[in-house]
Length: 365
Image (tube, rainbow, N blue to C red):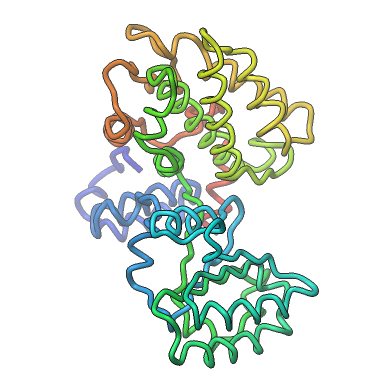
């Protein structure tokens, strides 16, 4: 897509006509060509997914409008709601927030808490509503009733998986129309995945550790590891022998373990961290021996004492080294990723350049 076309095609064809040519001759390169086309014509913000801002979404809501989260693999909206609630003084501890995972027998508790919080004020989160498709019409009617004269602090959050086929329906259309819908699907490129992983933390996360320099170096490497293993799924069997649902919870728990181990030890316990991350946390998802070996190999490279060196660093990918933690704060890491990240390619995952041909062709179709 970046090579010069033969003859006078570069001058004679418009950018859109070039897309048609790529579709006919190299369908596996159409995805990248289309990304470049959209970035040049509409703006880079349409191809680079920014981290989800729950606070900005909440500002558009009111007590009469539920928020509906569409669930995707590796995406859990619960921490977004819980963290925002704590900032606003609404949590499980002060009994102003209730989180119910819907299933058999949960209808009555859900209805009771909706009626109560609509009067008193509070947040209700009803998860996995697709499992209760026969009850959802009753929920819709109840929301219409309680929203009339509801307390200004009342909010209802719903979540459900999309139906397996486009022709199927598991949520009433009228309910969907009355909600603010949030579809925060996992990014499809490693740069957006890395920024999104890093966005789960803050400068306070780094400063809360007794060894902030080691914390930010190891944490950035951990976020890179998370982005790589999550995005490897798109390569099919060449990426992982089986498809694994790595999620943000794995990353945040590993970050908590990292901070605890750094606080409790004089030196960074590299072997312990690699084992916990690769064999217990992320390794808990992995069932294939070769996949487990791949995961451990990644961590052997990424979690290395060279992370702390201001001279060498760790080569996370060809042309992309870990920055010196002595010269960087939290926001500097984001700038470094945006400015220094190499173009998307299988080499970033340690794979051969031909590994993505089949995956890209399938995405094109």
